[in-house]
Image 1 (tube, each protein chain N blue to C red):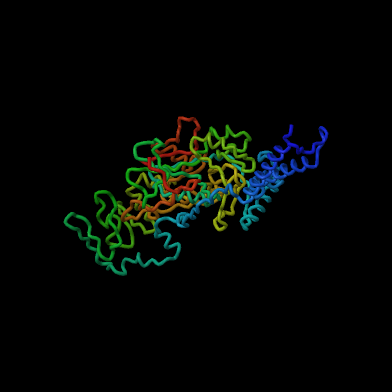
Image 2 (cartoon, one colour):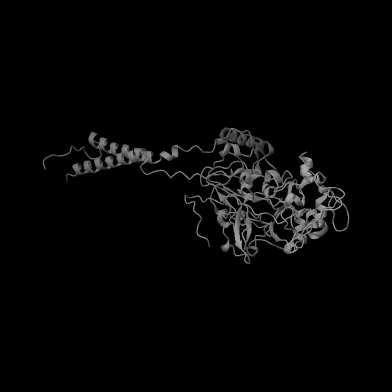
Length: 210
Length: 312
């Protein structure tokens, strides 16, 4: 019965192994989780609550330059502007107004400046019922044709809302039609989307489309 | 062999056997201790004060004042900004409802990031409460939805966009499964989470049919200059690792009478929010006059307070 030597051997080997494990852990040999890939912070423009356009009322409120709305700086009061059309009866936009894209209504049905502007007084707008409306009242002009949408807008259902839902605690902030829609081309413009979600794990590649 | 190891009489320990046994024990213990090294590097252990904190619904206003002070101190220590942490209570006669106009949504994801900014979600790893699904026209099969779309510009032809977030159900499965009652439905309809009571078991995440709950797998990271200092206890105060979070209709805004951040940032006005008990609110008007509206996964019986509708 002489296994004392073997016991020593086994215990010695164990001690060596344990020391090895100790050293391995101290030296972080099992490794740490790889650092997560950097996710760039989203551009602050995506956090902006500003509307896509600025309305005439905004310009007045902000005391901005209103010279663009001074029609009789160029036009003459006594001479209503003359419209010209091409062979397809499409309005030819005069050079001085080349920033205007005529795109109101499908099939070019709304193809005449004086459907909304008053040719005898360019400083006002005119709905079909003959009223004169200031530029700051453009919402009423839009509403004169777009009745259901105007009704929705009045109820807060169409269009942007911000401020307070609880009117006892603060005011609701509603925007004009022209804060989002270009009156000459009202379809809401397409825009670049904000970045999509990043997965928890390293692969940032988008999975295959379904 | 003639050599013999000196042996003591039965039961006694010789110097040699003692030494060799203790050498093995010592190296073994050292190995175990070294393997636990990451534990000693933990720096987000709860303070004694937090550990002994009472359950939210048992706290007196005085208890809450102490807790809010502790949270303010913790936030200031970590971010160097003194926050305004409050505990907003539900208002009487108010039940919140959300309505989202699928005809208007263009899928720009501004709501996603406004929410992250308002509610102090972790930026890396990324936690977002709102998932915008790009869906082909003609179906509501969510399996056909894609949330990783990245075209040059949106909307794309042939698709509509459906943002999904917590639906604030009348019958929330997430609340039923919570083993510690760390999440519950408040009287104004918001299902809230007490981040100090959550044990991180993720049962609620599994129970939610809308994939609305998010888990903090790692310590959240928020850049100091993007921290929103207007905080609420049940809402957007910074979370810690290992707890759940989700959309809470921006408690810190809505219980102060304001609109949620996602409503204010939506460029097309597709998002509508208000008090359904007020017949003049936008959401009342929508639910009573708009032609079509639906609740997502109506068939599972959760009865969401989140409605999708269409302009027709």
